Length: 485
Image (cartoon, rainbow, N blue to C red; front, side, top):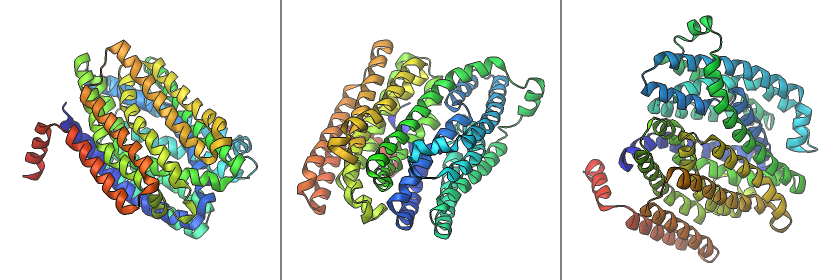
């Protein structure tokens, strides 16, 4: 598919992501004012625990499930698709219950790791019970994603984001810091219910009960998904453990409020990146898994990488230039130190968006060991860099570590594709990447010496220059003919 066709799929997911960002801005601003830096730090650590529960609750099978359903659909094997769905459902139900029990009875140990001397054991025990809702929601979500129901997922994302934002703000207003926990539980429960309704609406659960009656678990499919799932699980858990460990280091050295300051910068990065990256799980992985031709795979990889970078350029440059202002708008003056952290994180984000495309190609080509190795090394490097740099750079050290790790991850994903698949990033993509990186460096260096007007002018000039030198004339003509005439 061409770059404009890719834009169609990515833009559909991006609409929901943009809406979610707007809603999230409102939510984050109100929550930051209500509970301050310590509350944001608490939310960050609890979110890492929730993410770990999410991955464990379906044994990391979601990515492999989506891939295998796409392959079975291309082969028109409906019976195998039903068997895949049945296996996912059984494993998710059992795993969710087991994880809930494990977290509940190890709440004190988990609290010591996440919060050091601070006591949030009660919160962790309630989140253990919440693991069941998380598991069921993840299961339903995987069923829907495998069908590439992009418009449905877009509407679902908007609905869930809106309802959960209202619930979170009200609960925090009524119960203060305890409302954080109640909001998380309400979020998981609502997400579970609404995704279940969507799965049933599209009859994605049809055939599962008869299949389970004849065979509770298809051992061959279970072995296939668990093989892929365990690797996905290891990488996902490693990342969440890494993020939690980084903030645990900050808490130990500088306290929970400092962890909140770092979390604010990290949150902003995680808010705008989904505009670009949501489609990778929804569209790109299933599509790449269906491609058999190496030439088509390479073309799709370059098209996707180029489009992601073109879309990323204005956001990366603007967010870097106005990071201090953005932090104060989204949070409060109490979080002013987050601005310098965000500036460094954004340079790392350039490599991160590229890594997502390259990593998706690695998964689609079934280079599981390569994918596992790169993600584990990336996860391990974050707390290591933080520890090494903390004495010299303090709270800025995790951001510097992230930037270095993202760059190394870029090389680690690209080199296997070059040597094993003879993949080549086209010159026009390299030119685009280099122009964005140079622009970020220019803004970063000039930022201390410019006021808001000066920053705006330099941002506008750099963005226009990038678009002029990197968009082909026939592509611009096609866009004008299709959307502007």
